[in-house]
Amino acid sequence: MDDFDLILQNGINFGRGGERPKDDGKVKTKAKKKKYITGAHGSGSAMQKAKYREQRANRRRK
Image 1 (cartoon, rainbow, N blue to C red):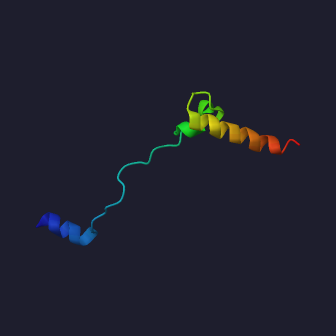
Image 2 (image 1 turned 90 degrees about the vertical axis):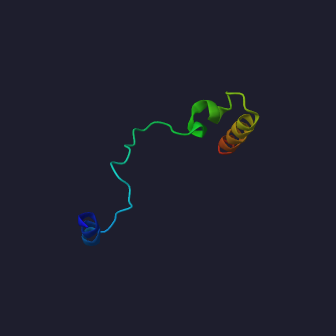
Image 3 (image 1 turned 135 degrees about the horizontal axis):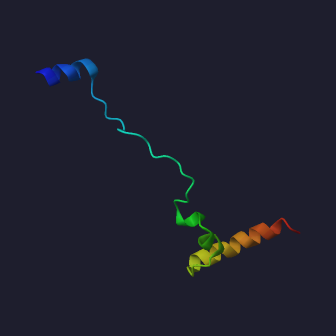
């Protein structure tokens, strides 16, 4: 009954336990890496996206 009384007094916490991971500034997704942005890794869709990014960047240079 001791555990039961403790739960009645304090309740149950279903939140996260422990510390949260620290943000170390590393790139966590492939989409933000330079090869994927430039389309250099060989994927057709990435090369097409890189082409569109380049066209969009060049619109401002007129």
